Image 1: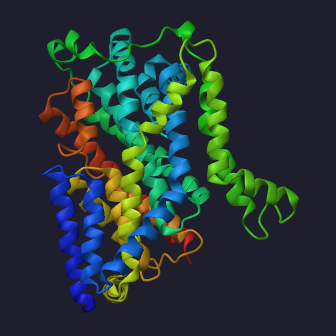
Image 2 (image 1 turned 90 degrees about the horizontal axis):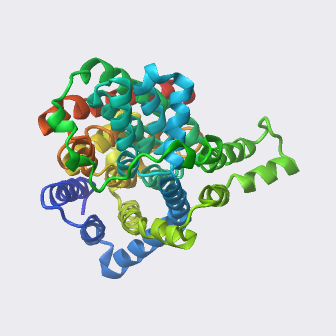
Image 3 (image 1 turned 90 degrees about the vertical axis):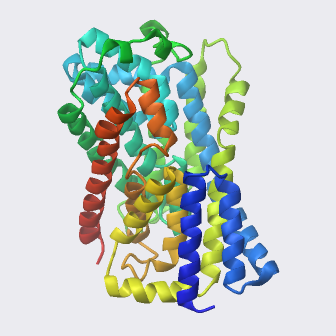
Length: 451
């Protein structure tokens, strides 16, 4: 089949992914594998050739990100079960002051969602937001949107969250560079969500909407202050892996600030994502000191929570491997070479997939699989900052927008008791703003960092 024909087939398959997963709630794992097989047959790879590409892509992706995702999920479980997330929130409030409680919640979300899935983080922290709204006489809508957008920013941009990890693996991006870009960009977008909430979510909702006892049933209560672990101890499992991975990336730069000797070699080993996350995992164990619970059960719960994410991520890698084995990249390179789209191409594709089917992770995985053969044509290259910028652009696109087909939209609206029309107006619009701001920031960074 010609390159144009393959492009049409890919467009149809992407549309099927959007429709089937968004409207019909089809299983993303089986859907991606089916689309990978269908594309391989259409590309002339044959049954055996297609299956071999699927096997290679699946195995390589799982081998690349499996342990990192599992370790990150277990760290998140320990933060959830021990009250570490609440300790971080309390520390943020002490730092910025109770008068700036909305900002404290935004920053808490920014930190907590690095290892904890954003929906889990919101469920854990929304009782705290409700308690603070009563204590500080602040609008609960404002606090809910501040918390939701802070969690959302790092969820989409900063490893070890599965989406950024999978995109970095697929595009061959240096994880340290992804973190160095993702942390400041996510912080700016967190602040954008904060200012948006302060301006457009300041209205008061009726007490019968937000204050009903039904909302509190089944949710975790805010732990008492004397039972929370220390804030520094709670942040160590998050900060240590980020610092190690970043130092490892700096050590890998030839002629860089850390030289090329024994220290650089040591830091490169310590900065390997698997080792760095293992250190974070070990640092999370002391959080459970004095807690009457089985650490083994918590570890098992963290591992179980990754099953769907791991299989979908690996299926996306299989889809990408089949695409790379075809001749489609040549046609797309010719088209995109004329457009000079740069980082805007991965952003727009991720935004389209996100808006259509709802999952940020699926949007990132699918987009990275399609974009990989096009990095050179887009002017991003396969080395240096280019792949990391592509991951950041994809992450920003995967934010825009969160609405009714996104499970996180319903977590935010239902757990905070926000009417759906209000959630669209103040939360969905905030995610659109964050995505647009992220695209602009990534474009400016590309202009500065790329030759």
